[in-house]
Length: 372
Image (tube, rainbow, N blue to C red; front, side, top):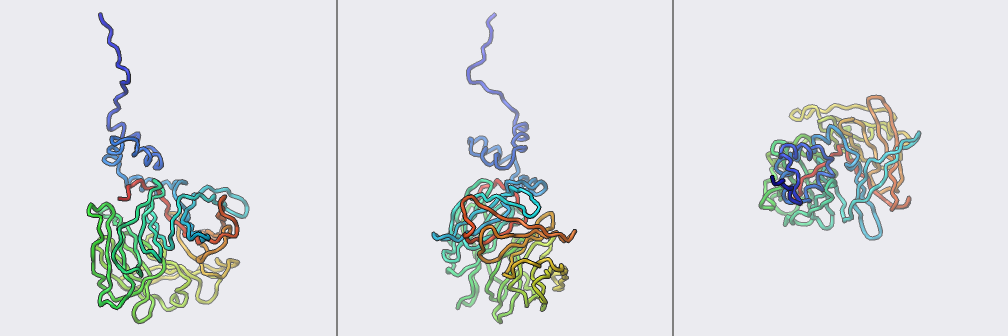
């Protein structure tokens, strides 16, 4: 009786559901690389592994491979954009974060949303997306809006979509121009929408909370306001009046996601050692609450600070606002136990005399989605 021979090169046929289960257990950075092994693997990952589940898993189990700080480094050749990972060495005095360079690009403004970094240059004006997990970057098409423009980067939780809005700063035109770009849109075009509120000049850093982007602006009567843009409906729906006592410290404040609500953190209006946390309790009634944390900023240089609130931990991050020497201290403050600890960002490629701006990433996650 003839014996059957196994053909050379014959492999093991793994069932699809088992393949999906195996891939689903891979760390995000390996899963991102696996997509490029073959067209078949890419199809399996794209069609059967929900990309948003990677973000969800990363939110519940924070990964050290997600960026924790974005650095804007001022060098002789221009501005270098990079970010850090949480490689920490704890000592009695400092928490050391090892600096890891990822890419080089001219950038001056940054926004971080669910694992993606959006950035643009004030001079060039083009918006670029960068995925730290896949290490890929894509510039969006030009908006056609005049160079003096401001970008808003947000996430639509209902449709699982990322959107970028571009607003023209006030000009002589009767209506303020605004356009929206949706990631994954087959047309890959900017769409015109109406900026249905008063003309205003945006400034500062925006924050996206539950599908709504909040940002600061100066209205035509020169008063400071906080404006919201709904990523789902693509409507500008609110103009928040800044509380009188907050308005005096408006330049030294940061909009934050404070435990799911819009928050604003700043120096106390009476001194530079106490820190005020303002929270929007009721948007319709314009009701704010305020918590003052005593002596939190004691010993910290009185230069303007940038604040953030970590998720889900709820620690307040305090970093220099302007360009400052690399190696200067930043701080975490835990309001639950009234404790402050410091950290230092170091780099094997930069010296202590290099100037950097630090942008805290308060909800670091991994994301394997393709940008275009």
